[in-house]
Image 1 (cartoon, protein in one colour):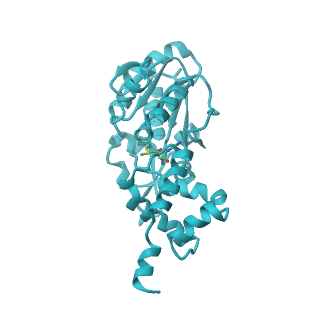
Image 2 (image 1 turned 180 degrees about the vertical axis):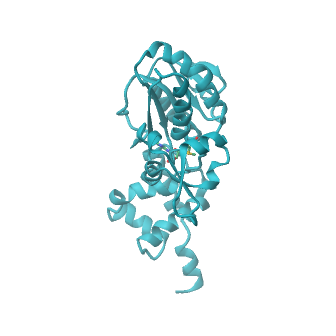
Image 3 (image 1 turned 135 degrees about the vertical axis):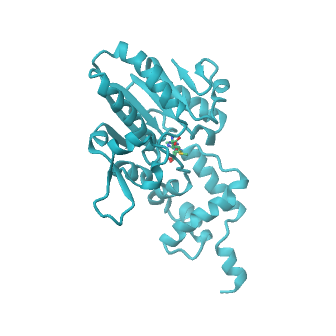
Length: 282
Ligand SMILES: C[S@@+](CC[C@H](N)C(=O)[O-])C[C@H]1O[C@@H](n2cnc3c(N)ncnc32)[C@H](O)[C@@H]1O
C-alpha cells in the first residue's frame, strides 16, 4: 500500500461524514457539525480496528450497504457519546436538593419513597451522588425513603455504572466523611480502585433508555429529574421535545435540573417555571 493510500484509509470522506452524522442525529439527537469531523474520525478508528476493516471507508460502506448497522449501532453510539461526569458535579444542585427540594417533596410524599431519576447518567456518578445525599439525610429523618433510577443510551457507561467501581482520583470532590462512609477500598493494596457500598447500590437501578424515544418507560410521578450536560448536544426542537416529555414524568411540584450551560432551555420551553437559572418546577 502506498503512503497516500494508507492515509486515505484513515480519513473520513465528506460523504461518509455526512451519512454518519445524519444517522447519529436521527438515532441519538446529537448533532455533529463539520468541526467534529476529526473527532469522529478518531473515534471510529476504534471500531475499524475492533472489526478488522482495512480502513474507515470500508467500515462506513459496510454500515450502510452491507447490513452492518444493525449489530453495530450500539457500539457506534458508545464511541460517539461524550461521557464526562463527576461525583458532586455542579454541587449547587445537590445543596438545593438537600435544603429545598427534598424537604418540600417529602411533606407531600409522606412515607412513600421519593423517586429520583438521573436521565443521561453516564457512569453513574450523578445517581450515586444523589444516593449519598439522600442516605445522609435519611440518617436524621427516619421516614425518608428513596429510589434512584439512572438511564443512558450508552451500554458501555451503564455497565460501569452498575459495577460502581472507580479509580480513586474521582474522589476529589466527595466530602471526606462521605468517602469514608460510602466507598469501599479494594482488598488488593496495589489497586487504586474504590467501590460504592452495597447499601447505595441497592437503592440505585440502571436501565438503557434513549431520550429520543417517543415514550419513556418510567413512572409518571418522579420527584426530581437530573438531565444535565446532554441537552446542549441537541438541536432546539429536540431539546423542546425531550424537556416536555421529561416534565410529563414529574409529579406536581417535582423538579427538573439541567446543566449550568443549559439554562437556555427556559427560552426553548417558555411555560417552564424557573426556580433558579438551571432548576425548574412543574
Ligand atoms: C456529558 S455526559 C453527562 C453525564 C451527567 N448527566 C453529568 O452531568 O455529569 C452525557 C451523557 O448523555 C448520554 N446521552 C447522549 N445522548 C443521549 C440520548 N439520546 N439518550 C440518553 N442518553 C444520551 C451520553 O451517553 C452521556 O453518557
